[in-house]
Structure formats: C-alpha cells, structure tokens
Amino acid sequence: MTQNSEFRRLRSIFDGDGSEIREQFIFAGLLLTIFERFKEYVVEQADGFFSNRWELRDGDLTCIRGEKFKNLIKEKGAGAKGQHANKEFRAALHWFCDLGAITEDEFKDIEHIYALRNDIGHELFRIIADDNKNPIKLDDVLTTFTVYLKIMRWWVKEVEATTDPDFDQETYDNTNWDETESSDTVFLREIILKSLLGDAEWQDIEKHVHAKTGSLGR
Image (cartoon, rainbow, N blue to C red):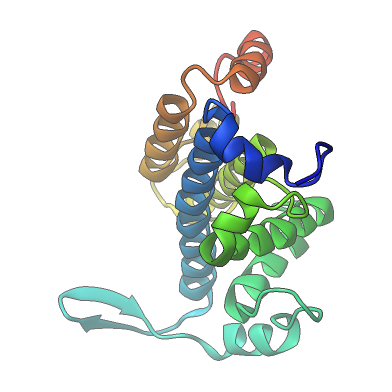
C-alpha cells in the first residue's frame, strides 16, 4: 500500500481510533431508518388520496389503489438509467413536487439519497473501506428528514386541515404550521438527537439551528 490517499479508509480500519467507522455506521442507520419511514408515508398519502375504495384485510383498513394513481405511476414512475426502480415512490414524490410541497431541487436530492440508501443496503463495507466510494454525510441524513417533515406539514395544512369540518378558519389562520408534528417525526427527531450526541458537526449545526428556530427542523 502506498502512503498517500490510496487505501486511506482501509488502513484507518486498523490504524485509526474507529471514530470514522462509528460515524458511518450511525449515519447509515439513521438514513435507512428515516428513509424507509419517509418512503412509506409518501406512498400511503398518495394511495389514500386517489383511492375510492377501502377494504378490511387481516384486521387492518387497507386502501385499494385507484386508477388515477396507477396512471400517475405509469406517467411519472420511471427513472433514468441507473436510478432506483421504485416507480410508486417516484410518482408520489413527483405529485408532491408538482403541488408545491417540495422543490425540484429537493426532489433531485431525494433521488440522489435513494441511490445512497441502496448502496448502504448492498455495499456498506465498500462505503466504509473504499476511497472511491462517497462516504455517508450528515447532510444526507438531515436532508431526508427535512424533506419528510416538509411534506408531512404541507399535507396536514393543505389536505387534512382543509377537509376537517371541525377545523374552522380562525383555528387554521392561527396555527403555526411550521411546528406541526406527527408521532413519526417526533420519534425520528428524538432518534436523531440521541444518536448524534457528541458528534462535533451535529453540535455545530444544532447550535446555529437552535439560535434561529429553537429546535431541529423548526
């Protein structure tokens, strides 16, 4: 092995103190956990919105996929060569993007992070040991959570609140939608906070975020 950047990560497994490895495993676990919950949420909301029939299956109320969502999947589900093959998720995310819940840049960020998510699932050792593989970054984790949070808050404000007969205009106007939470985002935020205790980069980010808003994602 040469004493330059080549094999740096592989050598660090034996010669380093393990901090970089621990960080990558923490980031990998966080990203997978958040991304899977995010994927499920996005598809479920689109499925439920376009469905006109529900059935009780194994004790759970399940929506039957509507034709409009099926057509949306056909129209916008396909990705470019090399991108992930989850057509229903891509179509649902396109739908949210077209409605203004997220931006085009955020849509592209999620496409990139989906590819990283697949790498984590199949090639985590290479991510840790191969200098030619991009490492998992804290920004990847936080971007996934932020986009999830943004879509959830948009959904509650624009769909749930506007179709709830008990939600009057005064309550709607006086609600701080930037602080809306679901049980899922509350738990995920807590997992992020506890997992990143002692992480220098996170502490710096949290310091700036807290100074402006008081908490992660608010």
